[in-house]
Length: 316
Image (cartoon, rainbow, N blue to C red; front, side, top):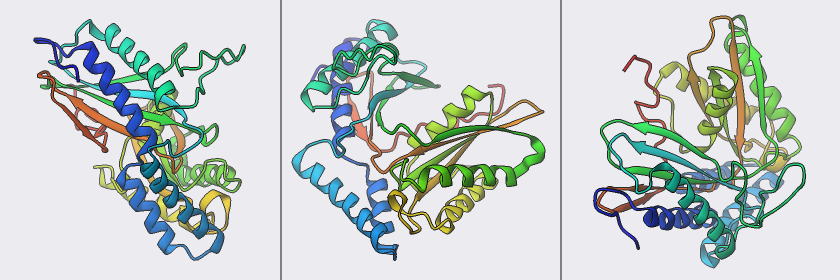
């Protein structure tokens, strides 16, 4: 494998790691999701929901054995990059993003991935999952580090997200109502391919709110809790509300619709309380790698996206 070049992380190394992340994400579902779905299958008492959950677990295992993508719809490849403040990249970030695009095009052919990315109006398809703003790359920064972390995420699903502008007077009850409205609308028809992880973004501007909801659904492991105790309690409550909804796997009756609920917040305008909800289905395809300045590469399943610095509420 290519290595770092001198005092820079090489573009060739970025390209090879991005390809490997695409491969791992497509085939191997992270352990936290596997364990959660397996536990839900053991606890489920409704026959059809239990059958669906057991088949999902079996599908995970077949994908691993056959080294093939675990879902026919291989989603939309995208990347999250956490960059150390002291990191140096060969060719800068233009070369960094070019390496990711080249790796995604190669992965589409060699893994293979379904070429899902098309022009929204002309439906033009280059058959490589590359195009305008595709694959997207979102960035965050980390002080005192010289490494770069990349998370490949193959985001599927056409349904399962919503946004509502609430007001301070709506309070926690308003969040609960919106949450139940959304899971009822999408889950009862199986549109979110549940069991799903529900991400809830609260506050910020509309774009920040929607972004946080998606990151909460996609980039935290099952069972993780927000470090704010009040928010963590609400996460637990929303999981329980999901169980009591009588909605199960893929829209059948049961209690296995919500795998977990993750909340992230941002300071917002004093007159409003925007809320966004995002669903991530059981085909949770992600893989993370940290690339050190000396060329060492560490692969892992937990993105660790929500660092203390990312959630900072102070000036510095």
